[in-house]
Length: 233
Image (cartoon, rainbow, N blue to C red; front, side, top):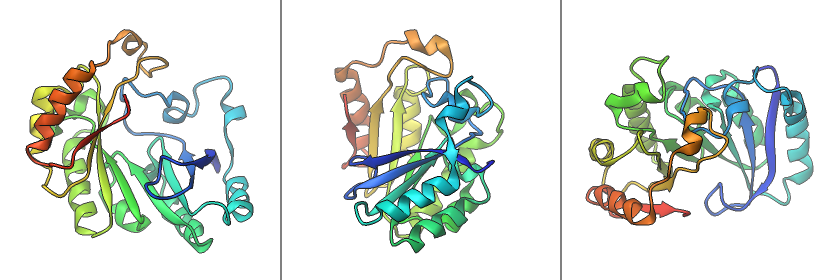
């Protein structure tokens, strides 16, 4: 990371129970074809990149002005744990009296502990055996995600598992395998795929699952995690 980030000043939906700001760190080791953050996945792409990113110091100065009106910060991406300085950023946020939520794809399990987030959202992209579909350059990605889930669960801090149900990436077989890694008390959230502006333009013409199919997929997960739910859609 070269000290430049993107951020949303205020969010009511990204950090459960808190009014938060969202910090997006550039770069990602995954290449999910349905991703909508192409400029963050590949910071060198896009002619307008320089207009979208701000210095990290500008964000921290913003927090100094805003910390009386928010109670948390979401560190997202891209993949925020790609950067060794993310734990330092998390400490700087906590020093301002704000809680930290981490959004991660789970590919850096050891750095999860270093961030020591108050809340973690782990994106489970597909079944562990099928991670080559979303992380072709990272052999063993599925095993890393399973390790991350174990670390997050053992931390005792609140967390959620998010599953984007993108056709061709997540379906019945994949969810049945994902469910094997889920425990009864886990907070699991299914969310629908949204075409348009995808990292792989071919996914812009992919039809999302209809609501009825999303409900059927939810039923698979609820066999293991009764609290599972669908977000949005």
